[in-house]
Image 1 (tube, helix red, strand yellow):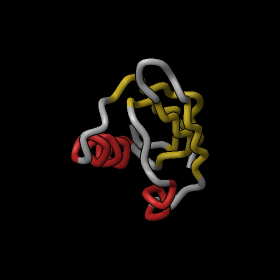
Image 2 (cartoon, rainbow, N blue to C red):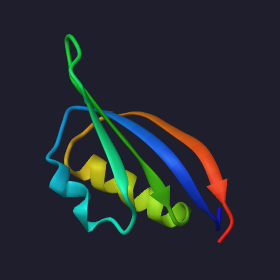
Image 3 (cartoon, rainbow, N blue to C red):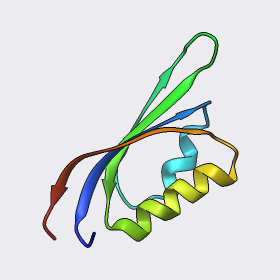
Length: 77
């Protein structure tokens, strides 16, 4: 994939919104207080597949289990 796409990524747990400040794009973040566990959903544009893999690796490295990745739309550069 070599085009920008908007993704919605949901994972178990929560983190501080400042974690997304290093990203180039505007991201929305939604905390979902669930029982028995809370989840977080982030939505934003990612420039290419390498950037997506980098973001997913970052989530993995801080120990946040991935629940869902959904491509909402693609945009030509």
